[in-house]
Image 1 (cartoon, helix red, strand yellow):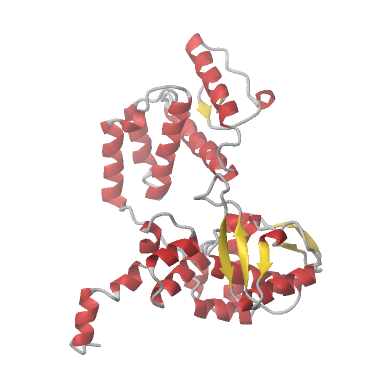
Image 2 (image 1 turned 90 degrees about the horizontal axis):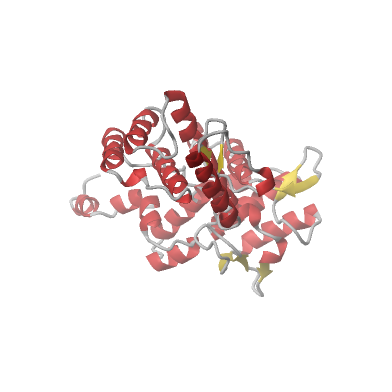
Length: 338
């Protein structure tokens, strides 16, 4: 974290040479700047790049809002954070606001300051937000098997189409997150004797220390991957790469490319526009989890397939399926009500 021109700070794990100089202020401000700099250096490499970007962006939003409204951002009063929550809740999703608050708390911990986010004023502001807006998050449109098959069939020809088929097929079978998909290497694949295969996931959101896990790939998915690899002509390095208009193979995909690929494939396949708009880089993960539950796969196996450490996300992804298996649904069936 480094101080900005207003004497406040943002989380940014930078090297000492990259740090902005402390503003000409009192000893307290200089002490905070030094504390933030020490924390940034100590935290280098401890978090994923995504987490670092989120912390940096979130604290920039908070410090910018404080500067615009005449509040001190560091240390911040609980009433300041509460007012920030009220203001952000007018335009931002509750989940985003909660993440902002967590980042503000992290900023204060890094500076070795009392955390204002544990005070009643902040807790009450979050309660107001949730009563007004709810806690539910919009769920990505699920790419269930029927939709996946339509998208694979309509993908077309050429290197880009082969890449897209392989990406979607691997995403569905492995339940990988978008960041995990683009991090895959050719060496992570192993073909089995029966034509199917396995995928070694070396690191994930829930495995930050790189213990690794192995995911299953069906035979048709392995054929799609091998077809892409042969067309791309690469046997090592990043598995999924950009493809130019002339079919030239470029560097690794960015996590944001995954949703764009899926949306484009869905549009070509003729999926409803509302479905296309709701597709995200995790849509295949949601769809595969729903399909597994729909076909009677037991919860521990679903959790293992998706790398979940608790059943909470599986429950969220499959809530509508569970409703159709509820007591009310069973009663309606017994009463022959359509």
